[in-house]
Image 1 (tube, one colour):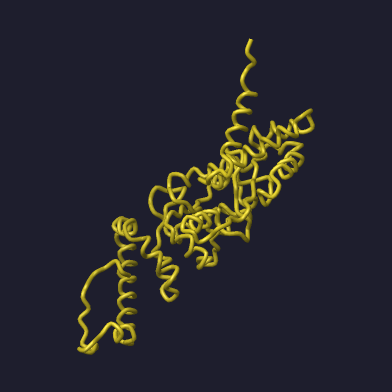
Image 2 (cartoon, helix red, strand yellow):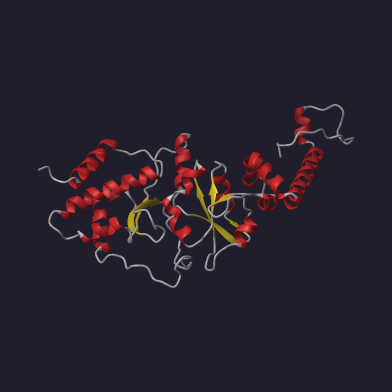
Length: 316
């Protein structure tokens, strides 16, 4: 509550005071509690009576109030009710209560995605499957979001789940566009293709597996269920709080045209070496989309140049 500025007139504080006396004075603690309750009450009133004005207030000071979600357990419920977020489904700010009211049948969690730039995370491949099912995803771009979401874990019995984690299950939520139709079957040799990718990438990734979250993109990277969220890991590395990162899971879209053609080529002469090169190219592609630095840019450039050369018609 460092946003407002004002003067407290009190007859209960001693005239001869020092910084140390104020810090340990129980009356100051009670004044602080009462001021916080009054401020939260006034904000709740403003949010209910003039939501447009409150949205402007939240745009300016929301990141500051979110610090209370992480630090202040006593007023966490009130702050959660006041919190507003950008999302994939609406232009205006949305509250957690509004989000829960709009949850799809079969949806049992509040889905989030974290990043530095709003426009970038809106295009993230990890949310493609959610958008295809009409599932709203909250867009978290404040650094404090990484910490308070993990500290709170749930709201009104609905857990927070990151869309960039591998444990997300979308099978229970039907597709919004064609719920009665079943999509094309995965390619017959998909398992063999994944096995080749795993062998080629080795310990660089934690796993390679088929994905239900992708609709337009060929691949994406996700964190394993028990590992640190990818955006939080990048934040800690930037501030030199973390030296080494966790290995990620490479998810492939079984219904993407590229994956279908790669799977169809399994077993052809000299296909194994080419598929190994494709595995590294797709991994680097997923890293670029995530905004990560490539560990070996020259190797990526070499593989890409070789692939482009193969695709060009032979000179006469």
